[in-house]
Length: 454
Ligand code: PHE
Image (cartoon, rainbow, N blue to C red; front, side, top):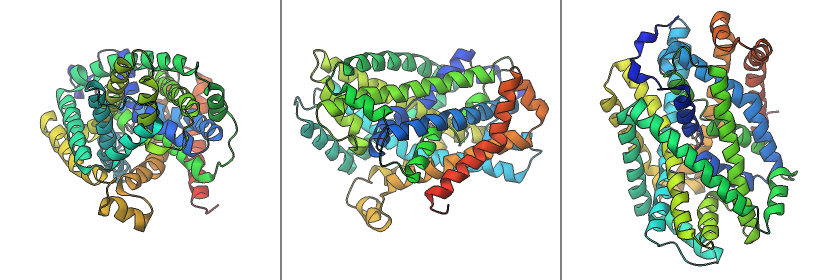
């Protein structure tokens, strides 16, 4: 058994609730409110949502449990965790390292979108959002932000700067506090907006779209739904593993994992129930793409009596949600350097944050005409930003998921598994079965279909 003392007291969560809040803060982010609704729109609605929910239950939840558990028993960041529990096998260490790299790539483009949320927060406060009831004005506004190299680089810099500052402060004072309060406020605002959306004429069409059958569902959509389940739950790259490593021995893996998965799913579906009624009521296209939340929300809010305050609140909370996820993405390589090379937190967070910041530049200019934007689009069919997102979400995270499930299913000892998960015997058996067989086979099956090999 690994010695708890390898981490100091301030390196643990204050309470299990603190862990759930921070981990839910990691899970709930742009993935839920920005990405999930627009992906649902582009993939035709209901069947995509169903496949996503299935992926959460059958793949996401078991992997969440596996990651949190490996973190908790190893009390280490990914690479060292795999090393400790596998008698220093190089192969497993490499898996941890791929996770760290995946986090680098994700944060580099995530920060650009985080920057968009800050830009809209700024526009809301400065009363510079168009006071127009025509969707076109908002679509133009988003289009000009998307293409602007100057704005993207500026807000990406601000967003990364804030993220680095919080990670510098460490587990308790930074990550736990922001997670707890930000999540609560977000939940309240989302429920309020959903109530408003349910009064709109497009509500029933929206319900039909989100929960009904959709026509154009393909294996590519299936891979996207599966990959997004990983992205949304922050799985497959060691973020949950790292947060799990700050748990204490008495904390429960199963209940905390369940709470995180439920909170994340609730908010993703909630975001759809806010956005699609607005989309259909004003006659917008559900497949509008990445601009969906930035066009629909201000458009709807500014028609309301307290719209000015409403849009400030909304973008404040969206920025916070993005920030709590970005923090977890930066925490992984930071913890890796602290653990493996003995660096100070200050140095580790600054160096990793700095590299990720630079790596984000190509994403920040991806909406433009240059090489990283239009240039790559003409050769690859996708600009840099989209390629980074596609590679990490659809391939690297699910592959990391296969790794962790095989690790917990086959490599660690039954005794280690039982100590953490054995309290409910039938659930234990199901989880082991899923991790050993179902998860890896199902992911490979969908991947091969998407590649048209099957
Ligand atoms: N889960 C976050 C979101 O939904 C993104 C994320 C992915 C965070 C992977 C950490 C690790 O926005």
